[in-house]
Length: 202
Image (cartoon, rainbow, N blue to C red):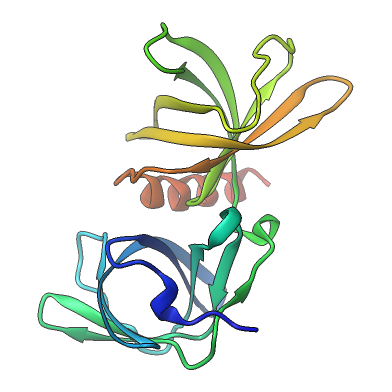
């Protein structure tokens, strides 16, 4: 059974996966108002006006039980200062591991509650989550933990809050996977810049 676009709560964010002839871009969007079950008025968090011609757009939102839902090949048109989006088909559950993930390997400040900051290694980031690598196996985090990370890299300020949803124990490290629960305006630009830089090193 598919999922209707109207299942995304008004005011909730989602991720747009935009692609065209080998190029890709991920941006945040927010549902402003549902017009029909499969049509919504949306805002896109981008500082330039976008034209959705000759591009393929999929959108992803977090459904119940933190499972991503994907709507494929949505249509978006300009409407005043916002956009109208139509989903031609119902959304389906999506494997998060297929998301646009970028390896970053940078040191960030981590805070849990009102405790002081610790330094942690950020392994990778996507618009929907991030992973920390604990090589000393000293963090001892448990699922459901909320924490914040902060770092500056290539001119971008990244300030994320995440909920721990995955713990992967390896011989040389523990990887903690988080679902992001806040918005960070620099994030989509940072991911695209970082991906381009990573490609030039290959």
